[in-house]
Image 1 (cartoon, each protein chain N blue to C red):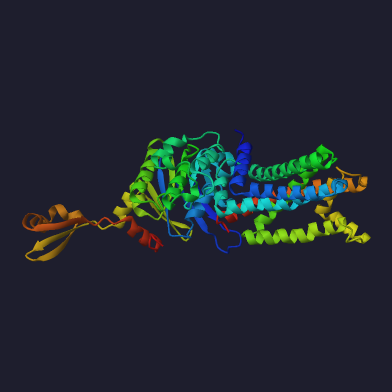
Image 2 (spheres, rainbow over the protein chains, first blue to last red; image 1 turned 30 degrees about the horizontal axis):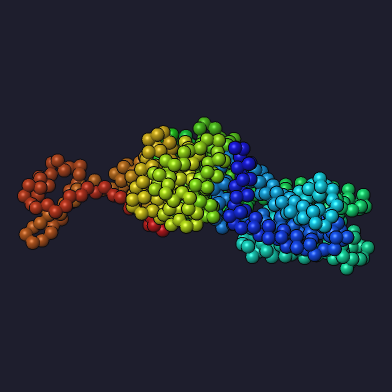
Length: 242
Length: 284
């Protein structure tokens, strides 16, 4: 079997054993309950918001937890003495995050379409979720490098939620209405994710969509570059080299 | 197989080099022991030879080519056994080994390895439920999973009872008999004495001694014979120079006329050599 597929299969299987997959499914069930409680007329507007939390914060958390377990078991040491490259290792983690987000999308989307007449651009939303998950999984990897244990990782996640997700949610619900804040939000990748996701269920400003999409693609490339660049330093630390 | 010349390495942030210009080599089919007190450069050297640490000074030649010219495909022929278990504890022994085996282009058969190590019956148990000794044996199995040509082993018998330590040592010897090469780091001088063709002692990042265990014991030992014999109710001792022994009438008189209790040569042990060469006790 191709080495990348072996890694991917291994990551999926460990996500199940560590209970991460089930935690993610439990979160999906909670979102399904929220969909059920949402007024059918409003479902198109709120559906991207539900997905956006999963594709951003959950992606960050899932990869962080998985890597922390590996760290605790010193399993990374063993991976480093195999013929797999760091790109194989990182891409396996990223694709695992994307698969998890797409499973959530399929569960929520199927329920929404079947029971709440959700109208959605299927290919668009899959692409948007995959891109968002890519960006936030890379962020999760980078901040796991900096976290010595679960507590520090959770602190980073809380900080990210406050700095990136909360302003976007407050703006969406028009609690923050200042014009200048809209411009500040252009540098917030979470806002870009929401804009791209919104475009799959409603009309959005074309310029906003192009800027958001371009920004997410750029930030994905930059974050992956740094995740790969800092991997050697992280692995050296794991091997007791620092 | 490996030729190391003037190897130097400093960890980022450290003022001094951890490895200070060491040179040594070992050949295919050899078990080479690399010994030294903790924190003196043993594991760092192993990490440099296995390409885990880079940015070193000097030269490492592996199979006639600079080690820096190899990519990660080098690991298809290299097995590494870490001192501490490096296994996925939520997976079973079999799942761990299958996962790692599939990462290599060629893989060993799992059943014979686990049977030999006495773990076949427990193959479907999660590693979390394994004892320390079982984890240590599974760690050794993990090092063999790619059917390597060279093994880097760090304390392979650590945490094992004498019976299982014997099995692991026999497997290491068998690996060498089949043409394999072993780079062994350990504190257990008895293992070194039994397994290694040659040993190097490292202390403070410098190699202090390289030779075969036999030569070292002869060189550091005393060329003398010590006798203990009974003289009435008392126990007496006598020491004779080995080089003039055949002309020493007193020695033969004692042999013929006294009840001998013990006879020892002045050959020393590797433990004593370790202390002399490194200045530190071998269990530190």
